[in-house]
Length: 428
Ligand code: SDX
Image 1 (cartoon, rainbow, N blue to C red):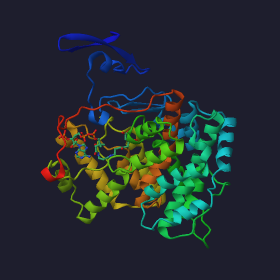
Image 2 (image 1 turned 60 degrees about the vertical axis):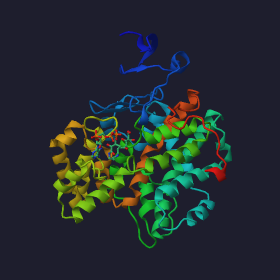
Image 3 (image 1 turned 180 degrees about the vertical axis):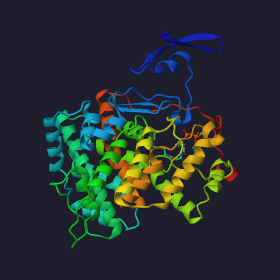
Protein backbone atom coordinates (compact mmCIF):
# COMPACT_ATOMS: atom_id res chain seq x y z
CA UNK A 1 0.00 0.00 0.00
CA UNK A 2 1.45 3.39 -1.00
CA UNK A 3 2.26 5.75 1.87
CA UNK A 4 0.86 8.76 0.04
CA UNK A 5 -2.17 9.90 -1.93
CA UNK A 6 -1.18 12.06 -4.90
CA UNK A 7 -3.29 15.18 -5.42
CA UNK A 8 -3.04 17.34 -8.55
CA UNK A 9 -4.29 20.95 -8.49
CA UNK A 10 -3.72 23.22 -11.51
CA UNK A 11 -1.08 20.83 -12.82
CA UNK A 12 0.90 20.73 -9.58
CA UNK A 13 1.21 17.44 -7.66
CA UNK A 14 1.08 17.13 -3.90
CA UNK A 15 1.69 14.00 -1.80
CA UNK A 16 -0.68 13.61 1.13
CA UNK A 17 0.30 11.03 3.76
CA UNK A 18 -2.00 8.01 4.27
CA UNK A 19 -2.92 6.77 7.74
CA UNK A 20 -4.08 3.17 8.33
CA UNK A 21 -6.14 2.01 11.30
CA UNK A 22 -5.88 -1.29 13.16
CA UNK A 23 -8.72 -2.66 11.03
CA UNK A 24 -6.93 -1.45 7.87
CA UNK A 25 -9.19 1.53 7.25
CA UNK A 26 -7.31 4.12 5.19
CA UNK A 27 -7.43 7.88 5.74
CA UNK A 28 -5.77 10.76 3.91
CA UNK A 29 -4.05 13.11 6.35
CA UNK A 30 -4.94 16.62 5.11
CA UNK A 31 -3.38 18.38 8.11
CA UNK A 32 -1.13 20.45 5.84
CA UNK A 33 -3.43 20.63 2.78
CA UNK A 34 -4.36 24.33 3.00
CA UNK A 35 -0.84 25.45 3.89
CA UNK A 36 0.60 23.54 0.91
CA UNK A 37 -2.14 24.00 -1.71
CA UNK A 38 -4.34 26.89 -0.51
CA UNK A 39 -7.31 24.55 -0.95
CA UNK A 40 -9.55 22.95 1.68
CA UNK A 41 -11.85 19.94 1.48
CA UNK A 42 -15.65 20.38 1.62
CA UNK A 43 -17.86 17.59 3.02
CA UNK A 44 -21.24 18.70 4.48
CA UNK A 45 -22.28 16.22 7.20
CA UNK A 46 -18.73 14.86 7.29
CA UNK A 47 -19.88 11.83 5.27
CA UNK A 48 -16.31 11.14 4.10
CA UNK A 49 -14.34 12.97 6.78
CA UNK A 50 -12.65 11.52 9.86
CA UNK A 51 -12.54 14.01 12.75
CA UNK A 52 -10.14 12.04 14.91
CA UNK A 53 -8.41 8.73 15.60
CA UNK A 54 -10.08 6.67 18.32
CA UNK A 55 -9.52 3.34 20.08
CA UNK A 56 -12.96 3.10 21.69
CA UNK A 57 -15.42 1.65 19.16
CA UNK A 58 -15.05 0.01 15.76
CA UNK A 59 -17.84 -0.02 13.16
CA UNK A 60 -17.85 -1.81 9.83
CA UNK A 61 -21.00 -0.51 8.17
CA UNK A 62 -20.75 -2.74 5.11
CA UNK A 63 -20.58 -5.91 7.21
CA UNK A 64 -22.73 -4.87 10.17
CA UNK A 65 -19.89 -5.12 12.68
CA UNK A 66 -19.82 -3.20 15.98
CA UNK A 67 -17.15 -3.72 18.68
CA UNK A 68 -16.50 -1.94 21.99
CA UNK A 69 -12.74 -1.91 22.64
CA UNK A 70 -12.49 -5.03 20.43
CA UNK A 71 -15.35 -7.00 22.00
CA UNK A 72 -18.31 -7.73 19.68
CA UNK A 73 -21.66 -6.10 20.48
CA UNK A 74 -23.25 -9.56 20.32
CA UNK A 75 -20.98 -10.86 23.11
CA UNK A 76 -21.16 -7.87 25.45
CA UNK A 77 -24.94 -7.55 25.02
CA UNK A 78 -25.37 -11.20 25.95
CA UNK A 79 -22.73 -11.66 28.64
CA UNK A 80 -21.97 -8.32 30.32
CA UNK A 81 -23.50 -5.98 32.87
CA UNK A 82 -24.02 -2.36 31.81
CA UNK A 83 -21.56 -0.95 34.38
CA UNK A 84 -19.00 -3.54 33.25
CA UNK A 85 -19.35 -2.21 29.67
CA UNK A 86 -19.28 1.35 31.03
CA UNK A 87 -15.93 0.65 32.71
CA UNK A 88 -14.62 -1.03 29.52
CA UNK A 89 -15.52 1.94 27.30
CA UNK A 90 -14.15 4.59 29.67
CA UNK A 91 -10.99 2.85 30.95
CA UNK A 92 -10.22 0.59 27.99
CA UNK A 93 -10.31 -2.85 29.63
CA UNK A 94 -12.94 -5.12 31.17
CA UNK A 95 -12.76 -4.63 34.97
CA UNK A 96 -11.50 -7.29 37.34
CA UNK A 97 -14.01 -8.28 40.01
CA UNK A 98 -12.28 -5.91 42.47
CA UNK A 99 -12.25 -3.02 39.98
CA UNK A 100 -15.92 -3.65 39.17
CA UNK A 101 -16.94 -3.83 42.83
CA UNK A 102 -15.09 -0.58 43.61
CA UNK A 103 -16.62 1.13 40.55
CA UNK A 104 -20.15 0.08 41.55
CA UNK A 105 -19.53 1.13 45.15
CA UNK A 106 -18.21 4.54 44.06
CA UNK A 107 -21.27 5.09 41.87
CA UNK A 108 -23.63 4.12 44.69
CA UNK A 109 -22.03 6.79 46.90
CA UNK A 110 -23.19 9.50 44.47
CA UNK A 111 -26.68 8.54 43.28
CA UNK A 112 -28.33 11.26 45.40
CA UNK A 113 -28.63 14.74 43.88
CA UNK A 114 -28.57 18.08 45.72
CA UNK A 115 -32.02 19.06 47.01
CA UNK A 116 -31.67 22.41 45.23
CA UNK A 117 -31.91 20.47 41.93
CA UNK A 118 -35.56 19.94 42.84
CA UNK A 119 -36.08 23.72 42.73
CA UNK A 120 -34.72 23.73 39.17
CA UNK A 121 -36.88 20.72 38.30
CA UNK A 122 -40.02 22.28 39.79
CA UNK A 123 -39.41 25.36 37.64
CA UNK A 124 -40.23 23.28 34.55
CA UNK A 125 -43.86 23.02 33.42
CA UNK A 126 -45.17 19.43 33.43
CA UNK A 127 -45.28 19.44 29.63
CA UNK A 128 -41.53 20.07 29.37
CA UNK A 129 -39.88 17.39 27.22
CA UNK A 130 -37.68 15.28 29.52
CA UNK A 131 -34.68 15.66 27.19
CA UNK A 132 -34.72 19.42 27.75
CA UNK A 133 -35.04 18.88 31.48
CA UNK A 134 -32.22 16.32 31.50
CA UNK A 135 -29.75 18.50 29.56
CA UNK A 136 -30.52 21.38 31.94
CA UNK A 137 -30.10 19.31 35.10
CA UNK A 138 -26.82 17.83 33.79
CA UNK A 139 -25.53 21.32 33.02
CA UNK A 140 -26.58 22.46 36.49
CA UNK A 141 -23.94 20.05 37.83
CA UNK A 142 -21.36 22.70 36.82
CA UNK A 143 -22.89 24.90 39.54
CA UNK A 144 -23.04 22.24 42.24
CA UNK A 145 -19.52 21.01 41.46
CA UNK A 146 -17.69 24.18 40.28
CA UNK A 147 -14.34 22.37 40.54
CA UNK A 148 -15.53 20.30 37.54
CA UNK A 149 -15.30 23.41 35.35
CA UNK A 150 -11.54 22.88 35.06
CA UNK A 151 -11.05 19.86 32.76
CA UNK A 152 -7.30 19.95 33.36
CA UNK A 153 -7.51 18.59 36.91
CA UNK A 154 -5.90 15.38 38.13
CA UNK A 155 -7.13 12.06 36.81
CA UNK A 156 -8.58 11.27 40.25
CA UNK A 157 -10.65 14.47 40.13
CA UNK A 158 -11.77 13.73 36.56
CA UNK A 159 -12.70 10.19 37.68
CA UNK A 160 -14.82 11.72 40.47
CA UNK A 161 -16.63 13.90 37.91
CA UNK A 162 -17.20 10.78 35.81
CA UNK A 163 -18.58 8.76 38.73
CA UNK A 164 -20.86 11.63 39.75
CA UNK A 165 -22.57 11.95 36.36
CA UNK A 166 -22.86 8.17 35.92
CA UNK A 167 -24.49 8.01 39.36
CA UNK A 168 -26.76 11.03 39.07
CA UNK A 169 -28.04 10.89 35.51
CA UNK A 170 -30.49 8.01 36.20
CA UNK A 171 -31.83 9.92 39.22
CA UNK A 172 -32.23 13.09 37.12
CA UNK A 173 -33.90 11.09 34.32
CA UNK A 174 -36.39 9.48 36.70
CA UNK A 175 -37.07 12.84 38.39
CA UNK A 176 -37.72 14.44 34.98
CA UNK A 177 -40.34 11.74 34.36
CA UNK A 178 -41.93 12.19 37.79
CA UNK A 179 -42.07 15.96 37.24
CA UNK A 180 -43.93 15.36 33.98
CA UNK A 181 -46.34 12.98 35.73
CA UNK A 182 -46.89 15.39 38.60
CA UNK A 183 -45.82 12.59 40.95
CA UNK A 184 -43.50 12.90 43.95
CA UNK A 185 -39.91 11.96 43.10
CA UNK A 186 -38.34 8.75 44.37
CA UNK A 187 -34.93 8.74 46.00
CA UNK A 188 -32.26 6.22 44.94
CA UNK A 189 -32.22 2.78 46.57
CA UNK A 190 -28.60 1.67 46.72
CA UNK A 191 -29.54 -1.87 47.69
CA UNK A 192 -30.51 -2.32 44.04
CA UNK A 193 -28.46 -2.62 40.84
CA UNK A 194 -28.03 0.33 38.47
CA UNK A 195 -30.97 -0.66 36.23
CA UNK A 196 -33.19 -1.89 39.10
CA UNK A 197 -32.64 1.39 40.98
CA UNK A 198 -33.60 3.39 37.88
CA UNK A 199 -36.78 1.36 37.32
CA UNK A 200 -37.80 1.79 40.95
CA UNK A 201 -37.18 5.58 40.85
CA UNK A 202 -39.24 5.71 37.66
CA UNK A 203 -42.22 3.56 38.60
CA UNK A 204 -42.56 3.34 42.39
CA UNK A 205 -45.55 5.31 43.69
CA UNK A 206 -46.49 6.02 47.34
CA UNK A 207 -48.60 3.39 49.07
CA UNK A 208 -47.55 0.69 46.61
CA UNK A 209 -44.77 -1.82 47.27
CA UNK A 210 -43.01 -1.63 43.88
CA UNK A 211 -40.98 -4.70 43.01
CA UNK A 212 -38.60 -4.69 40.03
CA UNK A 213 -39.48 -7.37 37.46
CA UNK A 214 -36.19 -9.21 36.69
CA UNK A 215 -37.26 -9.67 33.04
CA UNK A 216 -37.58 -5.92 32.69
CA UNK A 217 -34.30 -5.21 34.49
CA UNK A 218 -32.46 -7.72 32.29
CA UNK A 219 -33.97 -6.25 29.10
CA UNK A 220 -33.03 -2.72 30.20
CA UNK A 221 -29.48 -3.82 30.94
CA UNK A 222 -29.19 -5.17 27.38
CA UNK A 223 -30.74 -2.04 25.84
CA UNK A 224 -28.34 0.26 27.71
CA UNK A 225 -25.36 -1.81 26.55
CA UNK A 226 -26.57 -1.70 22.93
CA UNK A 227 -26.69 2.11 23.07
CA UNK A 228 -23.44 2.63 25.01
CA UNK A 229 -21.24 3.98 22.20
CA UNK A 230 -21.18 4.32 18.44
CA UNK A 231 -17.89 6.05 17.50
CA UNK A 232 -18.20 9.53 15.94
CA UNK A 233 -22.01 9.84 15.70
CA UNK A 234 -23.65 13.27 15.83
CA UNK A 235 -23.93 13.50 19.63
CA UNK A 236 -20.47 12.02 20.35
CA UNK A 237 -18.96 14.47 17.85
CA UNK A 238 -20.85 17.24 19.65
CA UNK A 239 -19.41 16.16 23.00
CA UNK A 240 -15.93 16.11 21.50
CA UNK A 241 -16.14 19.50 19.80
CA UNK A 242 -17.64 21.20 22.88
CA UNK A 243 -14.97 19.55 25.05
CA UNK A 244 -12.25 20.63 22.60
CA UNK A 245 -12.75 24.22 23.75
CA UNK A 246 -11.84 22.96 27.27
CA UNK A 247 -15.48 23.18 28.34
CA UNK A 248 -16.19 20.86 31.28
CA UNK A 249 -17.35 17.26 31.08
CA UNK A 250 -20.83 18.25 32.31
CA UNK A 251 -21.19 21.10 29.78
CA UNK A 252 -20.04 18.73 27.02
CA UNK A 253 -22.44 15.94 28.02
CA UNK A 254 -25.31 18.43 28.26
CA UNK A 255 -24.56 19.47 24.66
CA UNK A 256 -24.47 15.80 23.61
CA UNK A 257 -27.93 15.25 25.13
CA UNK A 258 -29.28 18.10 23.02
CA UNK A 259 -27.68 16.74 19.84
CA UNK A 260 -29.14 13.28 20.53
CA UNK A 261 -32.64 14.80 20.92
CA UNK A 262 -33.02 15.41 17.17
CA UNK A 263 -35.41 13.01 15.35
CA UNK A 264 -32.72 12.15 12.79
CA UNK A 265 -30.53 10.89 15.65
CA UNK A 266 -31.60 9.55 19.04
CA UNK A 267 -35.02 11.21 18.82
CA UNK A 268 -35.84 8.64 16.13
CA UNK A 269 -36.90 6.04 18.72
CA UNK A 270 -39.74 8.32 19.83
CA UNK A 271 -40.52 9.22 16.19
CA UNK A 272 -40.71 5.51 15.22
CA UNK A 273 -43.41 4.70 17.76
CA UNK A 274 -45.34 7.86 16.86
CA UNK A 275 -45.09 6.83 13.19
CA UNK A 276 -46.22 3.25 13.89
CA UNK A 277 -49.11 4.51 16.02
CA UNK A 278 -50.17 6.88 13.23
CA UNK A 279 -50.07 4.03 10.71
CA UNK A 280 -52.11 1.86 13.08
CA UNK A 281 -54.71 4.62 13.61
CA UNK A 282 -54.80 5.16 9.86
CA UNK A 283 -55.85 1.54 9.34
CA UNK A 284 -52.42 -0.13 9.24
CA UNK A 285 -51.91 0.39 5.50
CA UNK A 286 -48.12 -0.07 5.42
CA UNK A 287 -48.00 0.06 1.58
CA UNK A 288 -49.42 3.61 1.70
CA UNK A 289 -46.65 4.73 4.06
CA UNK A 290 -43.95 2.99 2.10
CA UNK A 291 -45.10 5.00 -0.95
CA UNK A 292 -44.98 8.20 1.11
CA UNK A 293 -41.44 7.36 2.28
CA UNK A 294 -40.31 7.02 -1.34
CA UNK A 295 -42.09 10.15 -2.58
CA UNK A 296 -39.55 12.97 -2.88
CA UNK A 297 -42.34 15.52 -2.59
CA UNK A 298 -43.51 13.99 0.66
CA UNK A 299 -41.52 14.96 3.79
CA UNK A 300 -42.47 11.63 5.40
CA UNK A 301 -39.50 9.39 6.14
CA UNK A 302 -39.58 5.84 7.42
CA UNK A 303 -38.22 6.60 10.86
CA UNK A 304 -35.90 3.93 12.24
CA UNK A 305 -34.64 3.12 8.74
CA UNK A 306 -31.34 4.08 7.16
CA UNK A 307 -28.00 4.92 8.68
CA UNK A 308 -24.98 7.04 7.81
CA UNK A 309 -22.59 4.16 8.39
CA UNK A 310 -24.52 0.87 8.27
CA UNK A 311 -25.19 -0.10 4.68
CA UNK A 312 -26.17 -3.52 5.91
CA UNK A 313 -28.17 -4.56 8.97
CA UNK A 314 -27.46 -2.51 12.12
CA UNK A 315 -26.31 -5.39 14.39
CA UNK A 316 -28.04 -3.70 17.32
CA UNK A 317 -31.37 -3.77 15.46
CA UNK A 318 -31.05 -7.53 15.00
CA UNK A 319 -30.43 -8.05 18.71
CA UNK A 320 -33.23 -5.66 19.76
CA UNK A 321 -35.70 -7.26 17.34
CA UNK A 322 -35.14 -10.66 18.97
CA UNK A 323 -35.24 -9.13 22.45
CA UNK A 324 -38.55 -7.45 21.56
CA UNK A 325 -40.10 -10.82 20.76
CA UNK A 326 -38.64 -12.35 23.95
CA UNK A 327 -39.67 -9.50 26.25
CA UNK A 328 -43.21 -9.19 24.86
CA UNK A 329 -43.67 -12.97 25.18
CA UNK A 330 -42.23 -13.04 28.73
CA UNK A 331 -44.43 -10.13 29.78
CA UNK A 332 -47.46 -11.46 27.92
CA UNK A 333 -47.71 -8.21 25.96
CA UNK A 334 -49.38 -8.19 22.56
CA UNK A 335 -48.43 -4.87 20.93
CA UNK A 336 -50.15 -4.36 17.54
CA UNK A 337 -47.46 -1.92 16.42
CA UNK A 338 -44.89 -4.76 16.55
CA UNK A 339 -46.69 -6.50 13.71
CA UNK A 340 -46.87 -3.23 11.78
CA UNK A 341 -43.11 -2.75 12.32
CA UNK A 342 -42.38 -6.25 11.05
CA UNK A 343 -44.65 -5.63 8.05
CA UNK A 344 -42.81 -2.40 7.18
CA UNK A 345 -39.46 -4.10 7.57
CA UNK A 346 -40.49 -6.99 5.32
CA UNK A 347 -41.66 -4.68 2.53
CA UNK A 348 -38.64 -2.37 2.86
CA UNK A 349 -36.15 -5.22 2.65
CA UNK A 350 -37.66 -6.24 -0.70
CA UNK A 351 -38.36 -2.76 -2.12
CA UNK A 352 -36.03 -1.43 -4.83
CA UNK A 353 -35.97 2.11 -3.37
CA UNK A 354 -34.74 0.85 0.01
CA UNK A 355 -32.53 -1.88 -1.39
CA UNK A 356 -30.80 0.53 -3.82
CA UNK A 357 -30.16 2.99 -0.99
CA UNK A 358 -29.17 0.23 1.44
CA UNK A 359 -31.75 1.37 3.97
CA UNK A 360 -32.09 -1.16 6.77
CA UNK A 361 -33.72 -0.98 10.20
CA UNK A 362 -31.42 0.83 12.66
CA UNK A 363 -31.11 0.70 16.44
CA UNK A 364 -34.16 2.94 16.86
CA UNK A 365 -36.60 0.87 14.82
CA UNK A 366 -37.43 -1.76 17.45
CA UNK A 367 -36.14 -0.20 20.65
CA UNK A 368 -39.29 1.85 21.24
CA UNK A 369 -41.39 -1.33 21.13
CA UNK A 370 -39.38 -2.79 24.00
CA UNK A 371 -39.37 0.45 25.98
CA UNK A 372 -43.16 0.55 25.62
CA UNK A 373 -43.46 -3.05 26.82
CA UNK A 374 -41.27 -2.13 29.81
CA UNK A 375 -43.80 0.58 30.69
CA UNK A 376 -41.53 3.47 29.67
CA UNK A 377 -43.55 6.33 28.12
CA UNK A 378 -42.76 7.49 24.58
CA UNK A 379 -41.41 10.89 25.55
CA UNK A 380 -38.83 9.12 27.74
CA UNK A 381 -37.43 6.92 24.94
CA UNK A 382 -34.65 9.32 23.96
CA UNK A 383 -33.80 9.83 27.63
CA UNK A 384 -33.23 6.05 27.76
CA UNK A 385 -30.95 6.39 24.73
CA UNK A 386 -29.03 9.15 26.56
CA UNK A 387 -28.67 6.99 29.70
CA UNK A 388 -27.23 4.20 27.55
CA UNK A 389 -24.96 6.53 25.57
CA UNK A 390 -23.54 8.33 28.60
CA UNK A 391 -20.51 6.00 28.96
CA UNK A 392 -19.67 6.47 25.29
CA UNK A 393 -19.84 10.24 25.55
CA UNK A 394 -17.62 10.15 28.63
CA UNK A 395 -15.12 7.84 26.92
CA UNK A 396 -15.01 10.04 23.80
CA UNK A 397 -14.56 13.24 25.87
CA UNK A 398 -11.83 11.61 28.00
CA UNK A 399 -9.95 10.29 24.95
CA UNK A 400 -10.11 13.70 23.24
CA UNK A 401 -8.74 15.39 26.40
CA UNK A 402 -5.99 12.81 26.96
CA UNK A 403 -4.91 13.13 23.31
CA UNK A 404 -4.67 16.92 23.78
CA UNK A 405 -6.70 17.41 20.60
CA UNK A 406 -6.88 21.00 19.26
CA UNK A 407 -10.09 23.05 19.41
CA UNK A 408 -12.48 21.98 16.68
CA UNK A 409 -12.88 24.79 14.14
CA UNK A 410 -13.80 23.69 10.57
CA UNK A 411 -13.18 25.94 7.52
CA UNK A 412 -15.78 26.90 4.87
CA UNK A 413 -16.23 27.90 1.25
CA UNK A 414 -17.69 31.45 1.22
CA UNK A 415 -20.57 31.98 -1.23
CA UNK A 416 -21.81 35.43 -0.18
CA UNK A 417 -21.36 38.93 -1.66
CA UNK A 418 -17.96 40.20 -2.72
CA UNK A 419 -16.89 43.46 -1.04
CA UNK A 420 -19.42 46.30 -1.41
CA UNK A 421 -19.70 49.79 0.16
CA UNK A 422 -22.09 50.62 2.96
CA UNK A 423 -25.30 52.43 1.87
CA UNK A 424 -26.83 55.01 4.22
CA UNK A 425 -30.33 54.16 5.44
CA UNK A 426 -31.90 57.03 3.47
CA UNK A 427 -30.38 55.78 0.21
CA UNK A 428 -31.55 52.12 0.38
C1 SDX B 1 -29.03 6.99 15.10
O1 SDX B 1 -24.51 7.94 13.41
C2 SDX B 1 -24.87 7.04 14.31
O2 SDX B 1 -24.11 6.16 14.66
C3 SDX B 1 -26.25 7.26 14.88
C4 SDX B 1 -26.77 6.16 15.77
C5 SDX B 1 -25.97 6.04 17.07
O3 SDX B 1 -25.99 4.96 17.70
O4 SDX B 1 -25.43 7.09 17.52
O5 SDX B 1 -26.73 4.91 15.12
C6 SDX B 1 -28.21 6.42 16.20
O6 SDX B 1 -29.10 8.18 14.98
C7 SDX B 1 -29.70 6.05 14.14
C8 SDX B 1 -30.47 6.81 12.98
C9 SDX B 1 -31.83 7.24 13.53
N1 SDX B 1 -32.52 8.09 12.56
C10 SDX B 1 -33.58 7.68 11.87
O7 SDX B 1 -34.03 6.54 11.93
C11 SDX B 1 -34.24 8.76 11.00
C12 SDX B 1 -34.57 8.20 9.60
N2 SDX B 1 -33.32 7.97 8.86
C13 SDX B 1 -32.77 9.04 8.15
O8 SDX B 1 -33.25 10.31 8.24
C14 SDX B 1 -31.41 8.82 7.53
O9 SDX B 1 -31.35 7.52 7.06
C15 SDX B 1 -30.22 9.10 8.43
C16 SDX B 1 -30.30 10.47 9.02
C17 SDX B 1 -30.15 8.09 9.51
C18 SDX B 1 -28.96 8.98 7.59
O10 SDX B 1 -29.01 10.01 6.67
P1 SDX B 1 -27.83 10.23 5.60
O11 SDX B 1 -26.70 9.30 5.84
O12 SDX B 1 -27.55 11.69 5.55
O13 SDX B 1 -28.49 9.74 4.27
P2 SDX B 1 -29.39 10.65 3.33
O14 SDX B 1 -30.35 11.44 4.14
O15 SDX B 1 -28.48 11.36 2.39
O16 SDX B 1 -30.23 9.52 2.54
C19 SDX B 1 -29.68 8.85 1.40
C20 SDX B 1 -30.91 8.52 0.54
C21 SDX B 1 -31.77 9.76 0.23
O17 SDX B 1 -32.45 9.51 -0.98
P3 SDX B 1 -31.83 10.13 -2.38
O18 SDX B 1 -31.67 11.63 -2.15
O19 SDX B 1 -30.50 9.42 -2.58
O20 SDX B 1 -32.86 9.79 -3.43
O21 SDX B 1 -31.79 7.63 1.25
C22 SDX B 1 -33.04 8.28 1.49
C23 SDX B 1 -32.81 9.76 1.32
O22 SDX B 1 -34.01 10.42 0.94
N3 SDX B 1 -33.43 7.95 2.87
C24 SDX B 1 -34.66 7.63 3.27
C25 SDX B 1 -34.53 7.34 4.64
N4 SDX B 1 -33.26 7.49 5.04
C26 SDX B 1 -32.58 7.87 3.93
N5 SDX B 1 -35.83 7.57 2.61
C27 SDX B 1 -36.91 7.22 3.34
N6 SDX B 1 -36.88 6.91 4.68
C28 SDX B 1 -35.71 6.97 5.34
N7 SDX B 1 -35.67 6.67 6.64
